[in-house]
Structure formats: structure tokens, C-alpha cells
Image (cartoon, rainbow, N blue to C red; front, side, top):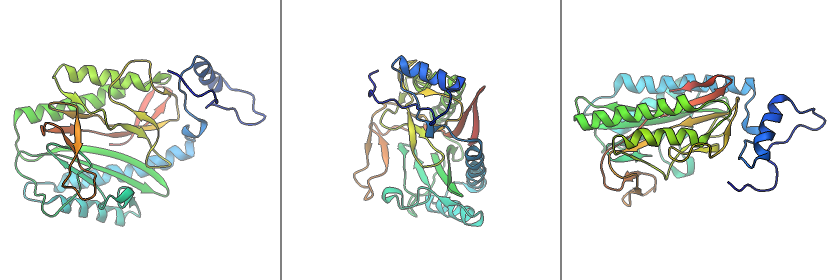
Length: 287
């Protein structure tokens, strides 16, 4: 990996490098991509993100209580908006780069960024991803879950299960002083067992002080590549797993240009957690 000559990791003026600093600078001297200091959250910032995560998880819990066949995805949006208002929180998606609603609701072949609509009615057998990001006191937390509406096919059930396993496997290999590429490599290997496609056009990301921060957390790739992961970093893992090809397209019928669909229009599934890296592995802040 070729990096810019400008160093990313700098000690504070007059500061003697700590063991933590020296470990990061050692990797940087070997030509590896390391985080900048602002990506390492302070304990106070982590607590702020954790509080946002509590609300974010509760929003998805509220959706889980009410989601059912016959309801519209616009009703899901109403549930999320109402919960946020009652808890002095803000939906990060609302009006983000033109996104018109507070939550993403992606049914079957819609991979992600599905826009809630009164005309999108959940049917028995559908699988739907509900993706929500909360802003609370200036801190962000992001998560998504899959919901199976009633009874569905064994093929869809397996896809939903394997997508969750991919997230769990990614979390297991995300260890301090490992690399983003380790996560993607492990997820891709698991998917290949089922001949599923791992979406490459979208990825996980840093989060916490902004909606999207470094690093890009890809869900495919080679071990030992990508950014070094160190304690204090907050990021999402959110593999999007397609039953067929990994390729996707933007729905031309979407006037907002957001909805991403699998190229072969086979179903897709995704689970997402917000995580903080600790000295012992990742801790879940929102799920």
C-alpha cells in the first residue's frame, strides 16, 4: 500500500511519545495506513456515543414490537420519528444529502437506502432491513436489523442468518492492532461457502462525531490491508450480502437517487452494529 508522505499520526506539541504512540508510529514507518489522532475517541466522547446508541437500539426495538404484514414502510418511519421526538434525539438520515425520510427500509432485493413510502406494503414472506442512525447531544450511533415478515422461504431464512453470521465473524476478527482488511477477508470467506455475493460498492465506516468518518470498513479483501484498528476507534460493521451477484444498481425510478438494488434482483440481507475498539476487542454500542 502506497501512502502519502505526510504523516498521519502526530504527537501533541511537547508531548513525549507514549507506548500507544510508538506502536502506531511503528506501523506507519512500515508503510501501513494508520488512523489520525482525531479518530481516537476520548472516554467522554465514547460515553456520548454510547448514550446515542442506547436510544438508537431502542428505536429498532420499537420497530420490532410493531412491524407486521400489511403495514407500510411509511408507518415504520413514523415509529422512528415519534420515538426520537420523545427522547430529544434527531434522525441522522432525515434530509441527509437529500434523503427524504428518517430511516432506511429496504425490502427483499433492495440492498440498502430504501425510502419509506405509503405504497410500500409489507407482505407475508418479505425480508426487510431497517437501518437507523440517531443523533443525541451531537453524538451519532448507527445500526440496522433484518426482519422476516411472517413465514418466508428457507432460502431467504438462510440468507438472513448468514448475513448475521457475517457481522458476528467480522466482530470476532476485529481485534486491537489488526487491520480493516482482516474483517472483510473473514466475511468474504464465509459468504463463499454459500455462493453469496458481498456488496463491494458500499461499506461500513467510522462514526461517532459525524455520520460518516474514516475508516472505510469494506466487507471483502485481503488480510493485513486497510487501516490499522486501535483502541478508541468507533466504527460500524454492516455487511450487505446478496443471494446472487455482489453487483448492484441505483433504481432509475427513484427520484431521489438513493435506493440500491441487487443487479440480478435476488434478495439481499444486512445487519449493522456500531462498535468501539477496546484493548480486548470490540464492544457493541448500538445494535
